[in-house]
Image 1 (cartoon, rainbow, N blue to C red):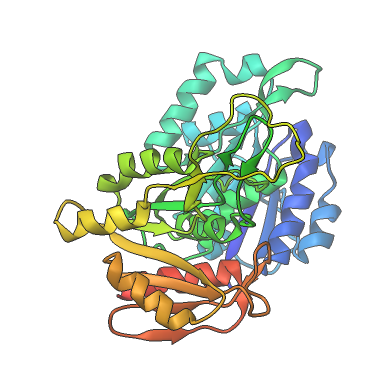
Image 2 (image 1 turned 180 degrees about the horizontal axis):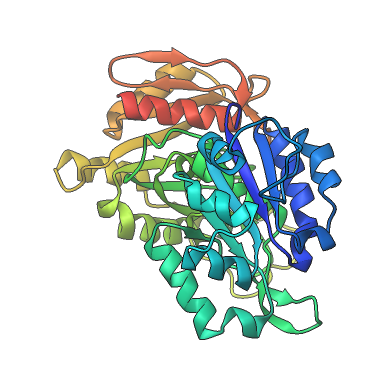
Length: 398
């Protein structure tokens, strides 16, 4: 994912420095070149040899270290870097960078960099909220540095407050957002729906389907990585919401209808990957329905056709967004999906057959057929992240 990219990890002297060994390992697993620069104080918390073992590169601390290939080292590294991540960023290193001070390898290299620099502040709650530290952070943001917000939680001294370094996975997600993809969707507002709806029968039971939301979540995640501003309207799932998205949680088809319609006019692209119930109980019982000797019959009524109404609005000129719907079939996939494309005035349908191996509910793979007015494209089995990128590619090129 990050093949060919070079990341400089700047580690300063905070207790959370130990977390950066795992960050270095995770970036290497993404096929990224990783160089680590440490302050002298950071070496009191974790040894340079740890990073050298994980990255395969010399860990640099001393600006005047003579034990390296001849070059102006901080300038050479700055030229190679696609991204710099300073974490943990102590009040001291934040103050140095904000003040233009370059008196060690880390601060000197950052000063020479022209690439994006991310800083993850980590320190005591009171230090973080010191007006001088806050002023330095605001100053850095003004100059284009990206500040990763610290977490709230138990700090090293036992206090509960702000200043905790985010989890390693979170730091890597920030790196991936900057480097993993070309930003070909930058400035685009994308509305994605995902997951299944639940329609109550009584306070205990409900009607739903087998959708896990994985495809919709993959679409939201990949769109963010490509620079889009993403809103994810999601039914009930067990998935962790993708970072950097606006997440709107719903339960019923009616709730999804209301949330989608409220946001549709502002979207450039709408991708309806949710499995919305077509029917709901005509009347939900106020109390639990008790068993009896007779067969139970539940009267059903149609829910609102969200995608159909979006298509009608577009047909009338009330909506300009690109409309992509999903079609889950068990037979006559192409014929049924083409009919859906025409009937609902869609720009594209991403169709899959439940009976095809690798395309079922809950799988990490999908087998997609992309259908537009002008062509049909058959995709091989691939991960849902790869399928999401293929769908986004098709939308961009349509």
